[in-house]
Each structure stands twice: as C-alpha cells, then as structure tokens.
Length: 320
Image 1 (cartoon, rainbow, N blue to C red):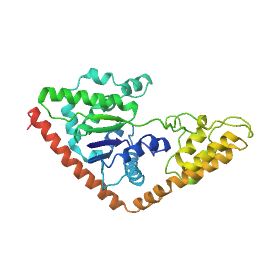
Image 2 (image 1 turned 180 degrees about the vertical axis):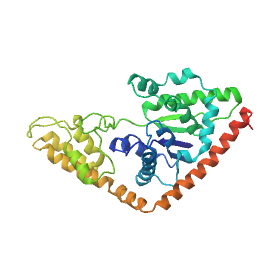
Image 3 (image 1 turned 90 degrees about the vertical axis):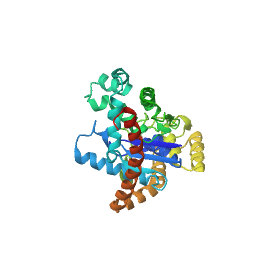
Image 4 (image 1 turned 45 degrees about the vertical axis):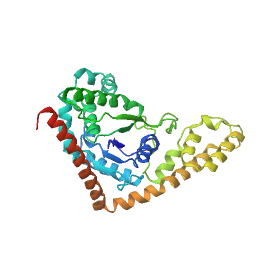
C-alpha cells in the first residue's frame, strides 16, 4: 500500500488541524511506502509574498517532523523540489475537460464569495491529480471537503488510461475521521476563517490567554451541566487522560464549579500534551542542515518514483 498526502503552507497549524488531519496522516506513515509533501505550488494561489511562502514552507516541514512524522518511515519533501509533477500536470491538463473543473465545488465557492479566481485555482484539481498519480498512490487521506477532488483525479486517470493504456494506478480516498469535532474559542468548528483557533506552537502564555477567552454559557456554578454538549469539555477530552476526562465529566454532572477552573485545567493539559512536540521543534530548528537533509532525501526518493511514472506516461503519449 502506498500513501500520499500534502499539506498547504498557508499558516501555522492549530488544534483542529492536528486532530482533523495531521495526526491521522502521521498514523498512516507505517504503510509500505508513504509520501508526505509541503504543497508550496498549491499555496501560490493565495500566498503571493515570496519570503512569506518560503517561511511558511519551512515551518510546515518543522511542524510535521515535530508532531511525529518519522523520516525513517515516510518521505517528506517540498512539492516544488519534484519538477516531474509539474510536467505530469501538463500531460493531464491536455486531456482534462473544462466542464469537469468548472463543476468543482471549491472553484464555484470562490466565485460565489466574490474572491479573486486565478487560473491556478481553476486547475488546482489537475495539479492535485498529478501529485497523487506521480507516486502510484493507492490511498489518499483527505477531509470530506476534498473528496470531490479525489473523484476528479480518478476520472482524469481513467480517461488517460482509456486513451493510452494502463498507465496510472487508480487511487482510493480515505476520508478522515471527523467524529471528534474540534470546537474553536466561540464553540463553532475551529478554523482560521472564523478566527477562533488556537495554534499548536504558540507560546503557552498566548495559548492560555486564548483558552481563558473561550465562550461559555451563563448557567450558575451550582447547576449540573451535561459534559457531552459542552465545547469546553470536548476540548479537554482531546488532551486529558482517560481518568482525568472521567473525573471532569463527573464534576460537570455534579455542578458546583466555575468555568474559569476548567479553562485553567484545559490550558495545563494542552501544554503538557504538546510539550514533547515543542521540544522536538526547537531541536529541529537549531539544526537546519539536518532538516534540509531530510527534505533532500525525501525529494530524491520522490523524484525517483515520479520520474518512473512520468516516463511511463510520456511513452504512452508518444513524447518519448
């Protein structure tokens, strides 16, 4: 089984990113082969300042390594360091119907919101297809909102295979578990778009300040509260041990506590949970040459595989 996943470097990861995607990506790294990349080519659609894009890409690599991605198990690299993917993208674009891309939800959403729409955004699913097909990926872990793009990838690959023969492996989407909703500071789903997020690697002081601003209801201290419907409890459940979570649930049902105490316990639990990642990240940041070596080795392995697939496609098209 070969797993492929990419993360766009458009800002620092928050708690929702970790539980909704990153943790699940890392849990899959023990596959026979795993490729994880920082999708800086995709990020060009929104990040237009060169120093910012470079820093975001570097930070994303550090974050993934600090959070548990093991270069001995998976190949980690920067997307633009594998030019074979861009060339493969053109081969796919040449046979992709405009109507297929016009139906993509993410493209239509941007138009509906009146946001600038560039050709790169329109062709985003084709580059994503090249990312996947270049490594003969069998499994692609994605959120529910990206499921359509995997279907587009499958359609593009099937059409190419129908025209030229069995060139590409047809990938399967693995929809990430979204059952553990990560609420933001306002109770809605944690998202940068809603400005209700708490970053993983911000200082404990800043993190605690955000936690203390989490919205709560107006019930009095003595009243019993249902932990299952409380977003503060849901957040604590992500970080506390099984016994701590059970004790907290009992406290909620008994009543007689203040939300300020719960927030302090949440901040302490989150800080403790991410402490090893903090230490690992600081260590990695102090050894940039080591990180560059990891990315270089990952890119070399990715280029080898992508080169094989590109050559296969070129021969099928008559380019070689």
